[in-house]
Image (tube, rainbow, N blue to C red; front, side, top):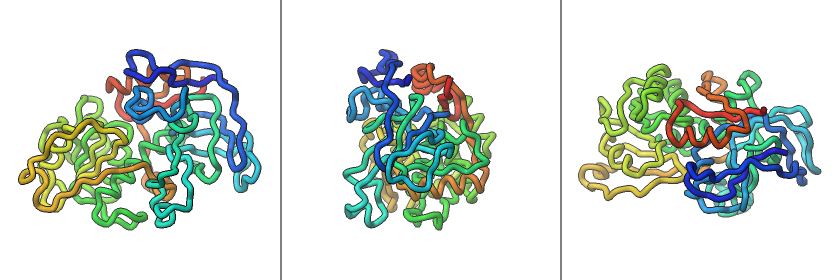
Length: 341
């Protein structure tokens, strides 16, 4: 099969990926073999390609926002059959027995593994996934539009829960009334739709005219540049851009008792914080680590209920390297999606 492989991690301008032939995988016991129909291009893929994340599998095929069709099943698979449309996301496996898994925090499992980092992902014609970690997708969501929901959407949703005072468990959380979003790419534009539908007043601070236009179109209460102050103090903020220097900016925008949720898997160094201006008055900083399967199921249900839609820019599979380069350069709003060609 045709697939992309990270052959020499480094800056995207140095062409760290190669388009290669790999054997079509065979599903192991408990796994599904999926024909890839669409795969979202996530900033985490860029971190894998550029070496921001350490190499976990030589020559790995990136991609963890996969929508595909089941074409075969391994032994001991129940509930799935050939022809089913499924989603494959970032979290690929956990041990299911550690203290974190037992208390519902499987995203913190030390034995967890990840699609497109520990195992080959969806920048390919076929991929495998443990059946227990595959998602059933709402029937009324388009295949290409569904792809970014599987990481950008799920992670944005978890970041939103982490930004809420009562948001660590389930859908029974109160969305912060005054919410700031820093960066407005694939994840933020989905998070904003959920937050607005749940009653938040969303203020967007981002670079790029296209991203600002999209924020206005989706109903943001205000839109400004990344370092602009929002028009009112924020109850919570989420940073999506992997730039540590934004953290103090967001902390200054918080009202007393406000919470900053950092959504990225990778972040450049955070400058020293001014305690009185940026951290006092019981402000909090919270990180976001992957997601649980429960997060995924909750988000997909809310996406269907609220009519959340991805703004997508399709690229053929053969142009994956171009899509990553365009992502790095900020050349599009919303999300890029690879489609079979």
